[in-house]
Image 1 (cartoon, rainbow, N blue to C red):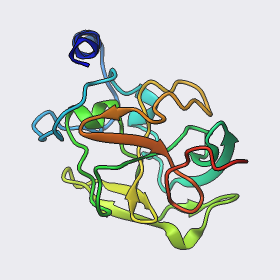
Image 2 (cartoon, rainbow, N blue to C red):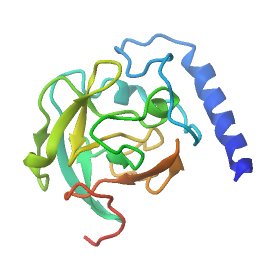
Image 3 (tube, rainbow, N blue to C red):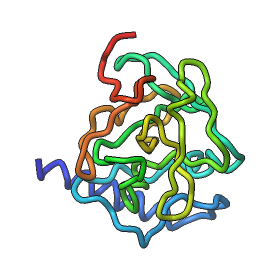
Image 4 (cartoon, helix red, strand yellow):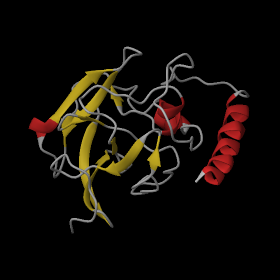
Length: 179
């Protein structure tokens, strides 16, 4: 297992070097001074689109169907995940964790789209003061390596001390309950 960490660290180093160049007009979503959850590795920096996804206001959540069954996505079709280390609606994913698993943040009340139960939607304040969208008490995250709508590259990944799963419409892990 330790041999897997070396390539992951190389990806993190390359992402950090790449992040040093160019200009960034976004307000940013992570803090370099935040503590990280224990364990795991990094999976690269978050795409610029993720960093500004909630800048325009409230977000809308809907469902999609795929290999794990029906799961939550944002209005663009990007998959949303829960982190099994989060034991309440307060996120434990910060720093390098939040770079690999960017939180879904909002500046307004999240709205329920097709297949989503509005009574399960909520928000929770992050350590950086931003409001993260929650579903059934689970903070919601993207996976930085998901590059297209419906990608599920983070499904079942064990990183930063626990596993990550797409979220079912019931607010549980979507692990192939059928479509």
